[in-house]
Image (cartoon, rainbow, N blue to C red):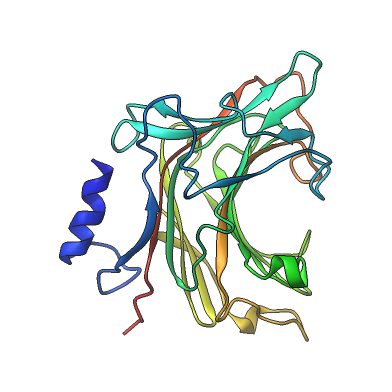
Length: 273
């Protein structure tokens, strides 16, 4: 059971891996084990709604409908259930999907953020798990900072990206790292764990505990500002259709497309020894 995971962590049992020497304490999680067909927990998630491209020339309209986000049975998930975010083609040729966020419900500063997901596939399909600075409504983007834990373009089946956006390094010029599976393997074939480990002046990205990207203030462009210290960030999960980066769907793209999220877990920072 997924809930047993947090219990074991609370007991302080040792864990394997090279990301931290000590066991981190759980801070927040969603195991998505509500009844099948229900929506995400409204005490943890709310929605961005509407269309208009979202600054990326995307094609979808985001909704709160169960057609676009609901709990499903999935035997590959840790306890047999997952959150499914679905991109659907409408009868009129448009698209609907969902974008969930913890804004106003939960935000965190530093620590480990871990998301286990099974990704969709297809040209024009853009799945993401990311974080935005909680002062977004005051200073705007990119001054608030953005941490992209995982982004995938559905026609690049074995490749994901982890990025930072901030003032002077945003949009098409983020601080970005890339991780690729071995040839002929795809992130849509099964679940993988995508994570960041975030400390003052340091963010590390990993896939299945393999660190592939590290950012520090030393990597910023000249005169750019690091905006990831002492600031709370909230979480987002979404499945976009089209946009300037992935391009639009073509005749090969099958709908509906589904992003499966087994769990989202947040842990306190463990200082490096």
